[in-house]
Image (cartoon, rainbow, N blue to C red; front, side, top):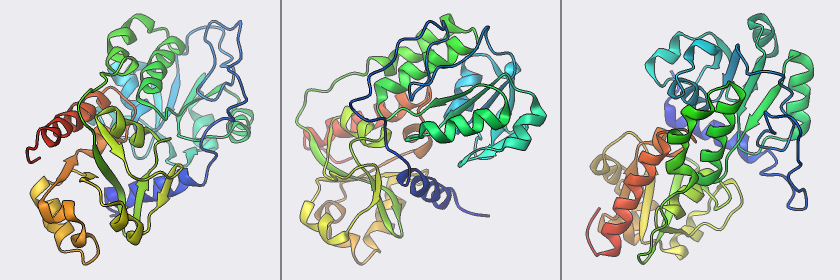
Length: 301
């Protein structure tokens, strides 16, 4: 079985090849449709709240459950695993997007696809083939993640339920202490990182760190450049402990040369709490903020 870290890297590689966001010159359009537009400014053509929903993307599936709407969920992607009950839902796609044939068989009246950097043409093609509205949610900031929880709730008629759920992300706490310079690893072999214009990169900065990698999207990162960057802290989304992760980094011939690794300034955070723009993102932010404050005060993580 492929490891979760390997699957994550494959996903990020796929995302890196997509259009990172809509052109800056494209202004959000105003829609008379009370169900608004999706994350890439496409109108969601619903005449009434959706009753049969396919959600593609672990965070989109998680949001459906958090909204108390699992009864509306008829399909999911094969990576979605939280809450555990999600695994009982029929599979209708992968990290690459919905499976057209599987979706048609489930007769959805809405397909929600959570995908950073999705382009309009691909979404329109899925919609044409499936024969149901396809709505894209692809937050690249914490604030957008909160807004998209509210949008999803609007599409399924659970608007009131979303307010409490979205609030911690819609108005994230802004830290005011001295920011440590951080590198965030999203893949190690090869080394991959997340730039400021990604959900992960933005979450790191909202939590009180300065991202040393000034790249666009998710990209491979040169080890020599990382050595020159000399980050204060090395952040790893993982389910492993900080001690185990530090041992692995110190056993790596290249990464062991980093001063922050030598000093033990390594921060771990459960990847599911940081990489998924759902309700638990607030917990990932809280974890990083605590570590950021410790470093600002001169304490070890």
